[in-house]
Image (tube, rainbow, N blue to C red; front, side, top):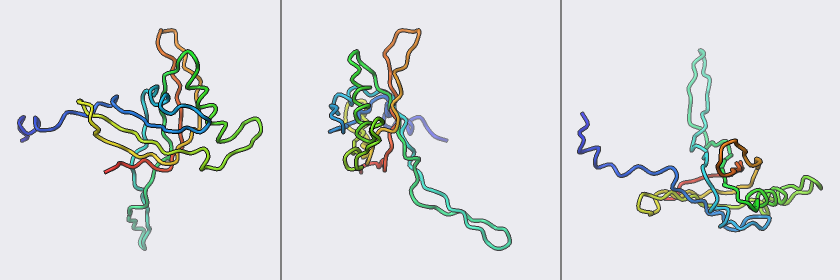
Length: 167
């Protein structure tokens, strides 16, 4: 049986709200630091391994590990301000990916960036750091509206190549 003294040795839980996204230079000219200040909640892709199934004589199957697998998307909500900074910033980035009016697009090296996502412990030290490679916005939702008072939020879904935990 597990004793309380054993459980009491476990470090504090990691707070889900204590994370930072470091955007750096954002295509389209937005201030990445300012975007990082405005992020809210996030839905992060799972680290996964694909499953490969092999059929053998007699109808038997065995499953093996495949390569790394992810759905390749990542969603973040942002708090919008009265200037429309978030919506305008991501609209410019989307335009850098592909201009909806002219149908012209850029090379991936010109619209995809790498970012860091850092979770902090209860005293403010880095607990986990993820390197996110090759992100660009796939969709930018309009600000949410509500009968209740509260901040307008915009959800952005990004494409990503990988999200790996730094050692």
